[in-house]
Image (cartoon, rainbow, N blue to C red; front, side, top):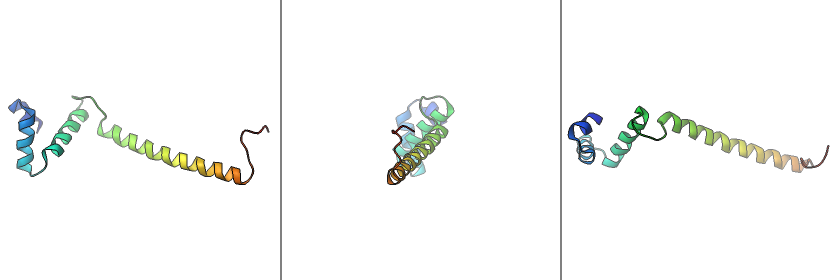
Length: 86
C-alpha cells in the first residue's frame, strides 16, 4: 500500500483505489496505513505496542482503584481510620 502511495504521489486517490480493490472502507485502510507509518517510525504517534501497553496499564489502574475502594470499605467496617495516630 505504501508503495502505491509513493508511486501515485497522491495519498487520497491511492488509498481509495486500493480500498475499493480490497473491498474494504477507505477510512479503515487510511487508519491502517497511518498506524503502519507510526509503527515504522515515519509518523509521530503511539505505536501499536505502546497502545497495547497503555491499555494494559489503564486496566491495571482500574483494578487497583477498585481494590483500594474495597480495602477502604473494609477498614471503615472494622473501625480502622488511617488518619488517627497510632
